[in-house]
Amino acid sequence: MKILSRDGLGHLVDVLATEGYRVIGPTVRDSAIVLDELASAEELPAGWGVETGPGQYRLIRRGDQAVFGHSAGPQSWKRFLHPPRRKLWSAGPDGRFVEAAEETPRYAFLGVRGCDLAAIAKLRTVLGRLPEPFVIGVNCTEPGEVCFCASMGTGPGVSAGYDLALTERGHRFLVDAGTDEGARILGLLETTDASAAEVTAARDEVTAAAGKMGRTMHGGDLRTLMRDSRESPHWADVASRCLNCANCTMVCPTCFCTSTEDVTDVTGEHAERWEHWASCFELDFSYVHGGSVRESGASRYRQWLSHKLGTWHDQFGSSGCVGCGRCIAWCPAGIDLVAEVDALAEAADGH
Image 1 (cartoon, rainbow, N blue to C red):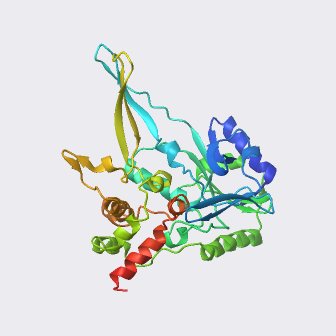
Image 2 (image 1 turned 135 degrees about the vertical axis):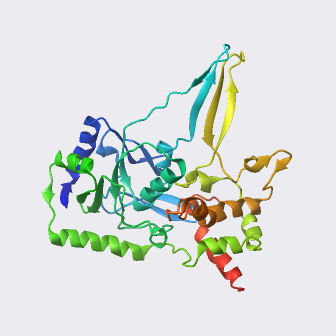
Image 3 (image 1 turned 120 degrees about the horizontal axis):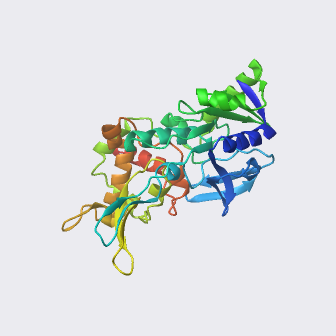
């Protein structure tokens, strides 16, 4: 384990850029901490934290200059691996179809939390081949009010899948290399050896963070609960509050559904087909000949939650939820996924 200074973090960003990586990380924009390409470490959100709750997200000033002292923002790394919109092909007046060129940027992701690292792994299981970014994970020591990754087994520490992992402690970072490429990049930086006491203290802080989660997911068999709750009256209760706006699916780091649209120019001589993100909350999402299968808001919310926590197991062998809490914070109606699962469990128990 090595120690990297705050200046060393800036050097890390510079080294990655020199090595040909496009460095993506958190930065402050539009009153939120978003993910964007970084020109330097000066663009990181030093001294900024967030307050979150159901339907609530607010930037706040911290009393220190911590770079990663904030929980998940409105974006996830999914947008760089599974873009919101991409061209599939085009065709001209000669009738020849031309497949769109696939750009594969050489990304370096800086600041990936345990929940998001798990989400990337789930997307790779679902979608197959994805770009292979250089991943710099960050162990969480200050979970947010809507976080529940500990109860989903995805955090607060990062697990397999990182090249480098950072634990922020004051103005320094403990760094662990998880791959040969990570060790090579680390070798290009000025570091010192971490003492055994520093390593233990950092690990204790991450372990303690598991007990500071703002939420805890119901500990029962969620797959069975979702299956047995199909006819629960609670779906109608949720639907009375849900706006069907699809915010939850857009901010979710694992939702992967897409649709396609064909567009032409004004002459009608050039056509393109584009793929874009879609949501099971859209009325047309389940449209087949004659109408939509899921016409009510209750049926669409049930589809989303039952798939995320239930039938995802049947398809992909795990839950589709990583406990990041984005769907709670960015729901304008303040619907809390964890609270809704608790309500379904209580209804199933006859309470």
